[in-house]
Structures are given as structure tokens and as C-alpha cells.
Image 1 (cartoon, rainbow, N blue to C red):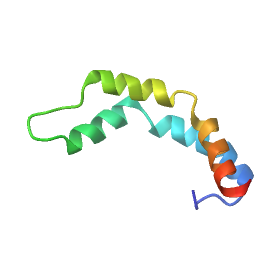
Image 2: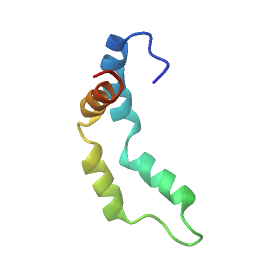
Image 3: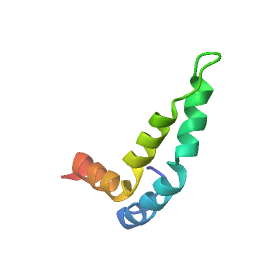
Image 4: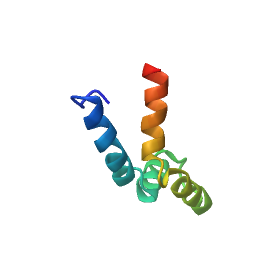
Length: 70
């Protein structure tokens, strides 16, 4: 999070970047990249990840604010 010049910049851009990068495809690719030979991530886990990140960008920013500043 050090690349943002101000809190307003962070608060505006992090949810957008999080939504764009925290995709089920990114999760699948990452998990399959570390999976033991011959195994792959279960689709149910991919779906659960998708459900867990939808709309969570603002929640993540608020959690960071509470943890660091309040």
C-alpha cells in the first residue's frame, strides 16, 4: 500500500485494484501453481473465493484504516 500518495488516493484506488486483481481465475492460477503434482484446486474452493471477495475492496480499506490509524 506504500505506492499511494495520500489517504484519499488509497481509499479511491484500492477497491478498484482489488476487484480487478482478486479474481477467481487469479486464485485458480495461483493455487494450481503450488499444487502437488497431478492435483489441481477444487472448483468449490474457487467459487468460495469468488464469493468471499465480491464487494470486499471497501471493507479491506476500512479494516486497514482501523488497524493502522484508529
